[in-house]
Image (cartoon, rainbow, N blue to C red; front, top):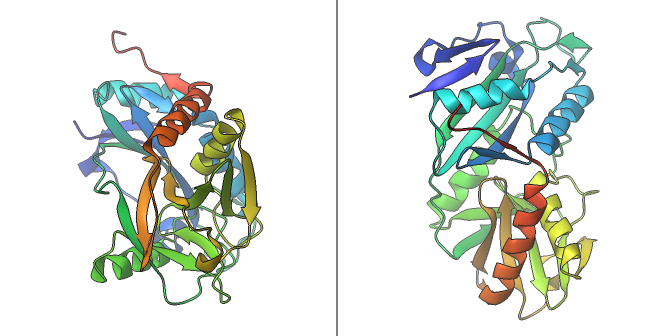
Length: 282
């Protein structure tokens, strides 16, 4: 049906407008988060709202209050009670002409909802991005995402599904729009949150799920050569949860589908503790 929440009103997508002087439009000044909506249920809503508040605070944007009732009504207006949908909550940095990040009121608050169909094959093949990616804003989910698109575009042109970024020393960071982790036996490894990367909500959920299964989780500084032989490797984001990787360049990884099912069950149990369920019959 194409209904969007925009600054307190529900409007059709074609009627959404952003002022020319909005800093989100001019500079990518603002933050956003992407949430998975499955059969009318919003997953990890509390965590996503808290991250928005944290990232607004980091950028000195006065974060608006987001009423969960708006999200419920948006789902109802779009009849998003079946299948998987992608929700985005966007907050822009106002219209100040100052060329710094001083304290400022937010500009636009937009919540969108679209049907989701993953284009990732199972498993998928990755490559490594050839240049270091170590920006000072790497740990903030800002609206300035051209660099991420460039990384994804590089992978597609090389006939891969995504690319893993690294530091100048080849230490793993993340993929274009996903975190990464790998598993060997009872141990899970992921690039440390002290590295220049966005340690995502879904990766935190994976960590909690793995601990619930009695596994050990290690945040490390590791290169491709440090990944143990016989490991399983995964992408991780809010929309897919976690997704198996068959190879990075010429390095091939194995699958353990029985273990994946166990982790998927534990992952779902963690998600179930932080969700917003919409009443389809209201």
